[in-house]
Image (cartoon, rainbow, N blue to C red):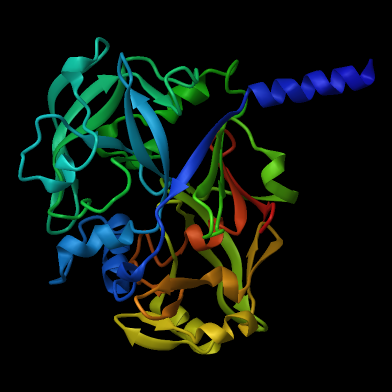
Length: 395
């Protein structure tokens, strides 16, 4: 009887989870030489009012988004399918919109939401805009049903979910993106137009979603197409080992936590500093001076614009980088924090650390992106306002 009760309890937990398989776009030679553009995008993302300097702006977001993890949602009745980037560093859902200009190449090449083809859609004239420095995503707000995974998953909002329908995207920024739009999973306090994000409704249904958590397992194995898995409403023990170390959110805007320390051996580069956990960022980012010292200690040479490379034959012998979170040590090896980029005739190994100097009140801070999340199973607990980390299974 006891064994049966345990099995039923485990079955109950399994049924309360929604597992969403993720895909990934691979890093390639376009990633090389673009770190300054990546830094500019991060500055824009975390510094309100920041303007891009005179860079080849139209390449900026394209190359920044060149190695990202994405999956599927449906919107409307009958369901319209979209691939979206799940971004814990923003808080809005936006999609390309039917009726966008033919000259908007990014919109033309991606799936577009058509409110007129959904019986549950309420189209409005409420303007919507996200500023991207020298360009912006512009459109209007629609309201409709949003489902995670497929329309029959059961993890859906009602028809009153707001989303931005983009009639103009900034330049060529999203042309090469493998996904159609972005679904922000940060806190509502940073949402443009104060539109509640879709997960709010999912979390509100405690019968279907007993735990208000989102968990990410990112597959860093470059030989397979399977990008990983996002789990809604619970964690999946199959994707991590050991215990989860929890760190409270220090301010409910981004998933902002305190990082105890970041060090190489006995040298510490950050102690009791603010860090943002961001699935929408490929790299690890931190204050420029600290990142410069880290790259010097790992024997990396600056190539251009804050980009550092190391000899590929030295990666296995690079020093470990230890990050303390919640009193628990998380170690990145050289293989974890070096990005291997294939060029035509050679392989380039780039440091996954980029320097950014974000001014107060948001900064200074560190950004724990996919370089870190790919090594460690990461849990975003909205109910208790905390972020958890554990060793990913198979890492």
